[in-house]
Length: 262
Image (cartoon, rainbow, N blue to C red; front, side, top):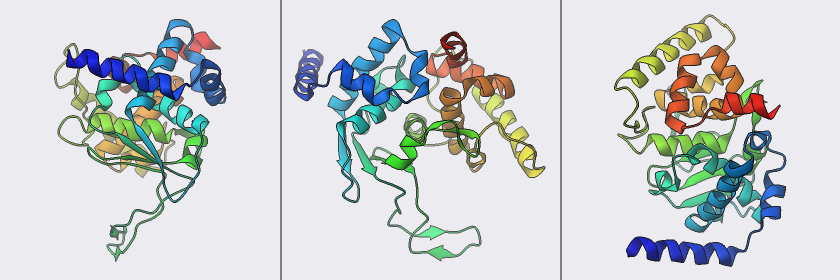
């Protein structure tokens, strides 16, 4: 009974927002990832996006005047990873704060030299445990397969990956596994990939993803996730076992979709 009531109320909120298919298509037209999603999957993603907007609260950071089109694009990017998982994977948080550019958290920061500063450097995104998702619109608009020094970047997917990671034991690079995924394989494969890329980084060898992913296991999962969706062919080529596990976790095969969309 309560589930039916919640669904009815959500339908009312979606109707009240009155977003149209044309508005949605216009908002996501410049994001190449959407070329992979056609037919029934595209319809499903649009419906999920509208429901995401009905469930979440978007608010401005620093007085930034964001538009409906911006909210539609951010919501779509957030829904792509959970397209075949469901919006309930995002049930533990509600608010999305959008800044125009980088934002500076109001908390102490320890720099690499050990000095503690009153505030840290400007960030493009942040995910709080059971708290808000904070995004820079500039970073959102710069998403792409080669957006960050030739590496994949998508701040929305990066931060929602942190939210998925936080569902089990906090942000540690190990989100909840599905029953059909082999126990222990995630840790073994991700650790091996992490160790190999750490050695490559130390030897100044080219990396298949943003080096920021090597700062912690949590960041490694988040960077792997944005690379998985933005540059799946590169990940499949250079990190095939990690790609395979992410296919199992996200229930998607974006490299195959990218090939068929060309």
